[in-house]
Image 1: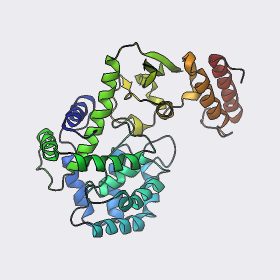
Image 2 (image 1 turned 180 degrees about the vertical axis):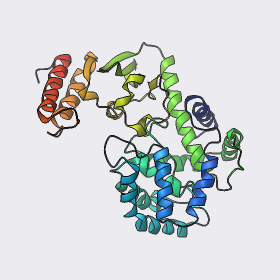
Image 3 (image 1 turned 60 degrees about the horizontal axis):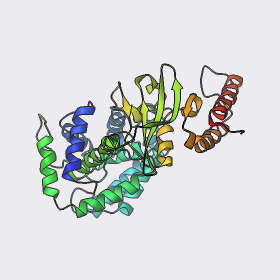
Length: 350
């Protein structure tokens, strides 16, 4: 079980110790979120919501739309559809819509509108929906909860099922309520269920890092690439033939990370939760322009899969300029040089 008082406590502790997020656990903002919704799903609501999405790092990224102006403009075209789905969900609910009451099939159309607004970004979609219906959509991101870009539906369904099976719901609510330190009264619609889910996910994923570090075996470098003044490294631990992986990035490499992925991370260190599959490793690396960076090391056991992914990514890059500092010829030369660097390090003939 991911949802448990043990994981909840771990998530609360991690939230307070490793982020700049407040100890009122968003209670003050829920007063603002519900107040903004009272006047309806209209242009005023959307402008306030876009500002909040920006503050919660759900808009900033390398690829557009990545400004408040762009998202505001795009969102105006979706407002009528969002309002229709919001009203449909409200009509299906006996009170404030909650994850306990509705199914994924009930909420998927609204979530899908969020995905359409920003090129399939699950971080944007879940946060936008959370600001509209806090008790129905839990918040996830790539760093704190470790939920990947395409995993929100799976996560939502799983958390709903776990909550239904949790015998100590009252204990979990009391645990979180005790932790909330706010100058404002607790909002009567504070989303205990979805916030407990979020914090339990945080505790679960980050405990796995501590567990892996305690196991026998020294971490080995799987892939290391160099950035100016720093590096991005995947390390692994093999236990009884099973690998666990962690991404480690130092402060000087933050420029290669989308801002929505970097939110809240301590500047002096950036270690991901431990993951257990090669696709999960690639999902972590792909937050960075890793194939464009200088390759420094590849573990012998991983030369073939690394070469496959590098070759596929670099040869699949659009033949266009990706930097204001590079003209077309320079860009193509960089791609050619990087392919050769990786080829030599991976020990392949091509």
